[in-house]
Length: 367
Image (tube, rainbow, N blue to C red):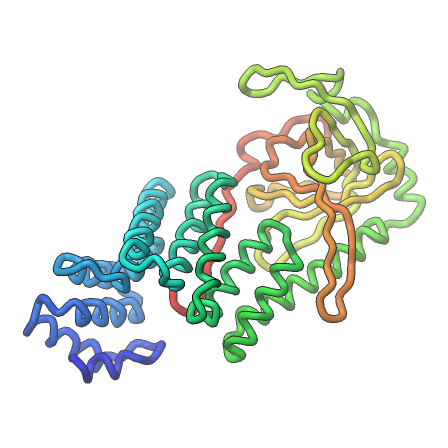
């Protein structure tokens, strides 16, 4: 087994290592480390099913935190449909918890649990309680000097911060991951793309979509009360039958956080494409010629709004984005929309066909 383990130490698949490890577990089926090493070899080969079988084989002989962590990771790569993927991710969380029960201070186990929670967050309807558990697990991982030097921790947490629109923390995390592993291209790519996105969006907001003054003036004058659609008349009846009082306000009236019982209305002056197409971004101009960014999550691909559309957003969530990173310094206001179903476009409320759950890829060196 020792020769197979030595050959298996590289990031890439080694057929000779797999051959030695296969012989080792045949000679001694209770060799837990041999099963774990063989599973990792199959994993590198891209054979997730055999990798899973090997990790389960190791666990059939003894509880082992490495086998449990690896099983947690491969489970998140299984599933042919949403329901099946959801079940595998739930099992992934449980296996990560079992690994922690064997060594509560192991930062790597906390990292794997954080990743499992993050996958569950996106797969399970984006429950805010789950993302809190995710960040809590990452915080525990950070306390372990070994895990704190793992670029995966900082990269994956930065991806979560990026989704939460905590861009300052996201950029700091990508930079930390890159510092720990300068040869890893993904953190640098994410950092560069995020800085480009923030710069472009800020510029589009400042210049109101780069539209001519005459065009902007015509847009402002074309905003009508009827564009509120079902949000007009001072109230709206939700899907559960609850009547919600709504008062129209300007973008400038909004306060940070959820603006309860408020609705804003404006015209789309531009949209912005990003490398991963999440979120859908546009800039909204209201009757006072104020322009804010709007980020829409869970929007089905190709279902976004276009320039000139009227958009009403009920109970908008206002965020103040403040970033100072390297040469980049900017501050702007943005409305976050977690579901397109709360938007009214050109007087009509968007339907379920406009929505699709956001997914997040954890591109990490150990997964």
